[in-house]
Amino acid sequence: MPFSALGLSAPIERALQKSGYTEPTPVQKKVIPLVLNHHDVMARAQTGSGKSASFILPVLELLSKDVREGKPKIRVLVLTPTRELSVQVAEAFSAFGAFLQKKPKVVSIIGGEKIGDQMLAVQKGCDIVVATSGRVLDILKKQQINLSHIDFFILDEADKMLDLGFAEELELILKELPEKRQNLLFSATYPPKMLEIAARITKTPLEVTIEEEPTVESIIQRAIAVNRENRGPLLRELLKSEEWEQVLVFMANKRAADNIAAKFKKYGFAADSFHGDLFQEERSETLKAFKQKKIRILFATDIAARGLDINDISCVINFDLPRSPADYIHRIGRTGRAGKSGVALSFIAYEDMEHFALIEKRSNIKLDKEQIAGFELSGEAPEKTKGPAPVKGKGKSKKDKAREQALKADKF
Image 1 (tube, rainbow, N blue to C red):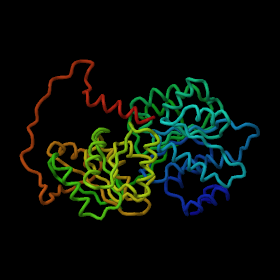
Image 2: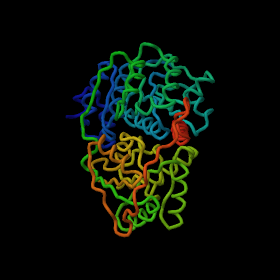
Image 3: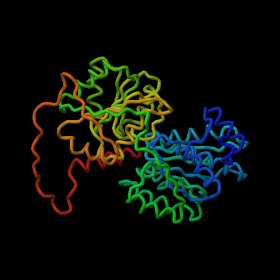
């Protein structure tokens, strides 16, 4: 089925062909006609299924049919959870709208860059703003952005957008939007909490669900049983013996990512770290180097689990397991993209067995625990001990609170 059969015009189809897209994905086939018919949509589909294009293309089509004279006013607001995804979505709007008679002006508003430059770009006039919520609020507080003309309000990776502190920020942004607008929510998962909050955004959405296996067939999943203290040496051994070109290694936190990246550099590996504490320029340069294969191993936090448009990652390694099964799916979805095969490894220590069993159950998988010669799991499983009962009102551990703060910081 060609894209034109979905109701897209020749200029957009020409841009698609130039970008190498020949036919729509399942989510695009279902969503594009609904958006073109002005419906609110809640779409759930697997990572890498083409969700972003399923709203970018019809929104561009509708804008091209409703060209307005004078200085551009913001008619489209797209919120994403990370800076990198905001930049990628903004670039896609520009690329797919390249051959329209009136090219839309797109501005990306993200943390880590000069707010003055971003405010100036908005004030000069633009049609589309793609942003992280924190930076939008910063500019709103300065009364330097007008969102009263919004026709399309879009959340990309909505489940993460509506998690933790994003929900509060979202409420503040919604107050600035006109009631009459088209709402589009896209995500890989829709947990109950998110559904409750989403109901405040749109009352009568059409729901689209693309039923797929939790992980794509092109990804070989492996679980390796290894003591925690041997994970680093094992990783070095695997990197020497396996022919993986680009490797993305997920770490539990920013400090761990920095520390292990520094160690691997000393061992002669082309490695670096990627997380929310880096300046935006550092983040952009690191990703650029990784895409250009100047960096072979990227040690990252979960900020890299979504929105990275890199098709050549041959292996994803869970050095530290993710906290939730949904995050596991997002992580391993960074490999096996664009029709290529990939490998996903998880290091499993005694302390991780129970948690990984939950991930397997929720992800509908069952993996044998491999043993690598010289790095076999040794000793005995630590006995479970009951910790002190949490003090009322202080149920979250310091670790949980630190993680929440880290996740909130990543949104900028």
